[in-house]
Image 1 (cartoon, helix red, strand yellow):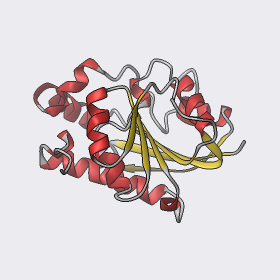
Image 2 (spheres, rainbow, N blue to C red):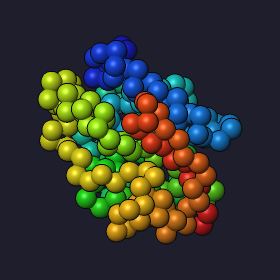
Image 3 (cartoon, rainbow, N blue to C red):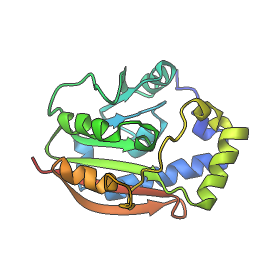
Length: 204
């Protein structure tokens, strides 16, 4: 039986938004990455992971049990778990993505440490964050007040941590990754500049 429709498929705007995001992620990843198992930290219902990698092994972690069930229906090895304590062994993956997760976390550096633990040396990490400019704020307000994004009212953005912003006291995402022995290889944007992406490689 096919997986039920994702809430991202509820209207043309959110579907187009997510497809553009997946396209950016795919274009940032190195050649032949699809031969590696992908880990999606914050997999949700698996819709985005399957846009990025339609076929092949994908592992996902999420703290929402209903979403984990939906991801499993999409053929993802999804597990319930916390980003602060991933139920996975050390050095288990060559490719990890973390899509629009860090801005929801009280301790993003701790999450990145845990992601680093399960990523092999030389492995690649893709992170995306919103760019909370005025157009993004308007879209997010409409999405959470009147659209399917109401579910996010209970999981709000608790920070404006975002790729490309080094003004915060901790230096931002790039500085956190550098401190954890990552090399930032490239950055990109999609959805009219309202989402930023970053590709980093673990050096040691």
